[in-house]
Length: 338
Image (cartoon, rainbow, N blue to C red):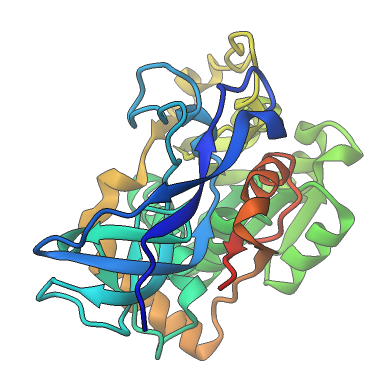
């Protein structure tokens, strides 16, 4: 079989102001470099679109370098090795790497990890068995220091991370798990996944709905994917000594003005709360522990995962924009053709 010499890719054509629009992206073609020593050529099967990518579209200093204009974006991908000059991978291997948003990629062998598709389909290694799963596991157990008997509230709970957080909490002995989501269908799905209570944040003030769902015992842990009104509500309902794992703030990612802190932040003093932000990159030391646990949970059905799949590289920008609007249930993925 002849190997490809070019790849289609999605480039950042301009930096979004507020919500991204289609004109911020460009479908282009780029030449593939010759395969060097230690490198592999990968045909991407699935690429991941994730909320954190919105921040990288701004030209500001952050924990991750901004995307360059007129260059391909990047992000998680899983694909098949078509050719290898690496001792670590052979042709036919399925690998996870970070050169997504394109159909083919030349990847350094030591920058790709082999996916055992005997455990789960390839797409799961971008979700439940990948960085998404590690984010949920480490955020709950290591950052928020979850303990059996804790009552847990998860915002954005029908998303890729949130849905796993709730199920892990149940598996580890939570007394109660509460989730918020953006539609009646998502609320129903959370209850199917074993959440004790769930509510649609469109149905009324988040604080009132959370207080009702939590009951008189309150909550001990809040896993924050949303920020804004959700964080403010959680601070009101958290018990003394409560912990907050600050994973994301999707409600604020498209804001063009500085967003205010919760108006009740001073509650953290009297309640002796811990609010801790984290990045999954700082939790890689827990990856092996997580992988073993999650493989077992998936095998015995303790944890289930959802995927929202969009077909075609050309539709990746729309998938990303839909993700920011909450159109996904579970992990948002783009399946590449050909």
